[in-house]
Image (tube, rainbow, N blue to C red):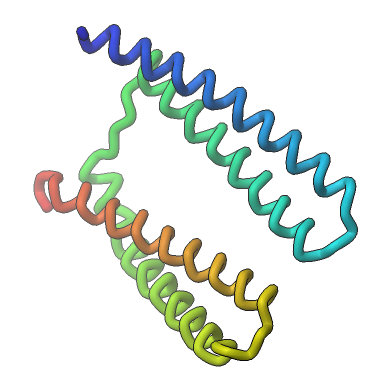
Length: 144
C-alpha cells in the first residue's frame, strides 16, 4: 500500500469514527435528559465531552493528512518546555492526592465516591502519560 493510499484509508477511518463519536454524544445526551441522578449525569457528561474531544482530535488527524502535516519545531518545544515541566509536577501531585483519597476510602463501602476518585486518578495518569510521551518527542529533536 502506498503512502497516499494509507493516508486515504486513515482519513476514511477517522471520518467514520467521527460519526460514531457524534452518535455517542447524542446517546449520552438522551441519557442525561432521562435521569436526575447526579452521578449518572456526571458520568454521561464526561463521556459526552470526551467524545467531543475525540471528534476534534480525529479532525486534526484528517487535516494533517489531507492539508498540512503536523509538526512541532524545537523552538516551539523549547519555548514552553519549562512550563510543561511545571505542569508535569502538578499532574504528579494530583495523582498523589487521588491515591491518598482512595486509601482513605478503602473498605468503607463508599462505592460512588470510590468510582469517581478512580476515574479522576485514571484521567490524571493519562495526562501524565501524555506529557511523558511529549517529553519523548522532545528528546528526539535536535538540539535536545
